[in-house]
Amino acid sequence: MRELYPLRIDAFAHIAPEKYRKALEKEAPDLCRYMIDPVGPLYDLEHRFRLMDRYEGLVQIIVPSWPSVEFAAPGKAVDLAKITNDEMANLVLKYPERFVAGVACLPMNDVDAALKEAERAIDQLRFRGVLIYTPINDRPLDSPEFMPLYEMMAQYDLPILIHPMRAPDYPDYRTESESKYRVYMTFGWPYETTIAMTRIVFSGILEKYPNLKFVTHHCGGMVTFFEERIKQFYDIADRRREIFNKDLRKAPIDYYKMFYNDTAIYGNTAGLMVGYGFAGPDHLLFGVDFPLGDMDFGNRNYRQTINAIERMDISDEDRRKIYQGNAKKIFRLPI
Image 1 (cartoon, rainbow, N blue to C red):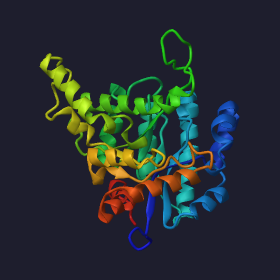
Image 2 (image 1 turned 45 degrees about the vertical axis):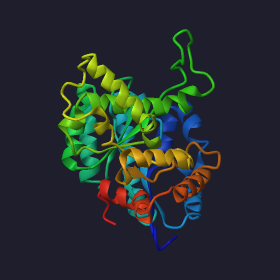
Image 3 (image 1 turned 90 degrees about the horizontal axis):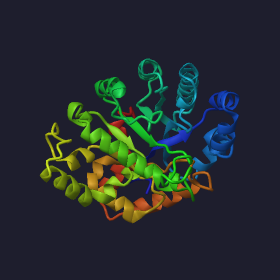
């Protein structure tokens, strides 16, 4: 196994550096206690490294953990983003054998500041992408104020990672005040990813910036599993002269296939084969949502996901792309 796949690059590995954790604890203690403190590997490097050492050749592209810094006022969000990025940059420098790159935290409730921070993170800190959430302060990703970020990242030729977020006070039905049974997270987050992808497609962002790279969490949400439904329903819309896609030069489904998707569906081989079949071997990246969504702090998800990838009915060459080749190419990693 080692000879075939000398590296397994986790392209979406969450982290909450200790200085950021302390700043969050001061700014929003309840969020810190709920979202960060219970998950040791987010901030405890010894714990993190012990888990990583169980998997030969495992390295990580580190990505800021939830919550998004937009919970804070714009000025404070900028401070939190800078603390996070500075600490992540230090970790990449200190542990290059563990962390092959960082993805920047952006204060998207101040777009001008976010652009400056993206520029600083990439040019000075040598980050290899940026993270945004969907929605951004309840605004869709195709809002006009976010277009300068897309133009910038297209020029850098570096990816934008999209993380879904939906709170429990987002009800499942309009007659209720909150979501029940963790529906908001279990099903709401993949749906949120699907909405974001759809808004990006039909707003023409990928038509305008065809080299722009978006990486979705959880294997593209619902999109990869509903390919034929997407084709059928937008064909119907077109026949009924619903012309919301009038500026697109290709079929909508072709733009959906331009997204890159990670393997963080927790060890579902059949689901991974759907994602693989949807966009092809060049658009699937190894990722497990580390260390979140796992009562074993990431160990279960690594074990289950690796086992699922090994069970995929694909060539060794394509499996190598998933584990390492695609991440090297998309993030332009110097390894």
